[in-house]
Image (spheres, rainbow, N blue to C red):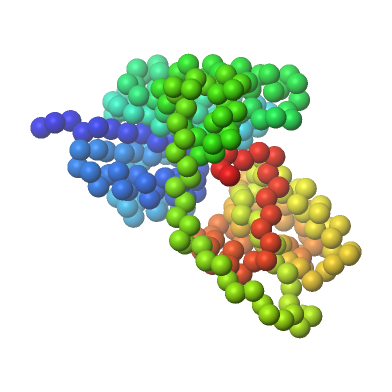
Length: 288
């Protein structure tokens, strides 16, 4: 019997695995010649993987993107566990997602001599506007990691073009794949014909509470806006490591009437349909 082609996707959280990988991995696993695994952190969203019957392994790894957010101890442990898993399962393809996972995941695949190593750029380590030494360090890391990679996949053509021009990757490695978002899920609602003076304007932010998403600046804007115009409500859709910190910040400043934390949602299209303004304050984004 012919051996299956074994693919491993490495991503940070179970929530990210559910949102970004489950649909695609489930489709790939419909082919009896292929076995696609996922590695991610623990959490309630693992149930989505179980429901699909797909193979996965839980390996906790850092969730920040900068060196100051990364735990060396946790990174070393994740690296060792990933090397053991790759050697045991003998994967043919390793596909990494995210900055930190892209570093230790590609190194683990290289050490284990995986035939094909791919990395999907959800936003490169380097971006314009970083402090001099930090920017140079991340540029060096991007270029170095490219040498351990067969294909660098991009969802954003502008990011891919910049990476090639800046020699962060070779043109033969770079592949534009788009986002894969099904736009038919999103509908434009009919605009209200009249405003009775009571309806509140809804501002929607779809982003996990995380330093890179820069919610602090967004909430500071809300604090300033309420003194000029108070018929609005900010909806924050997503869950992340700054959930409690941001909620405390809002409570301390008395912003509860203007800010609503929805947490993780699987009905984002419906909520966006009810919104008037979409806002994104991220320091950088890999998805346009």
